Length: 119
Image 1 (spheres, rainbow, N blue to C red):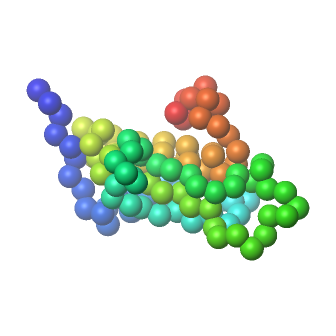
Image 2 (image 1 turned 180 degrees about the horizontal axis):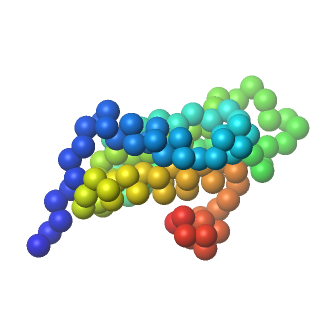
């Protein structure tokens, strides 16, 4: 039997992203610099992504890093709902995706995130 995607309003999904951010240690949130977190329904061009970090990781910023637009972390609602079977799965997946994308802001790559269980 094929699994049916979880149905969830955008507002509820955004609340889950906020709750996931609330679980990130305050020490990490304090050192996040020039980054915004947004929710979109779908990734660009039909890509198969749950989240995306766009910007310059803190570890790559040099003395000349100034006057740039904020980095952007996007969490994609519909792909997340498609891979989950229950609301509990969505809560867990959102938390993992938020941590994963924040880790990219700190310069941690996908290979290391997979090693750590956040892939």
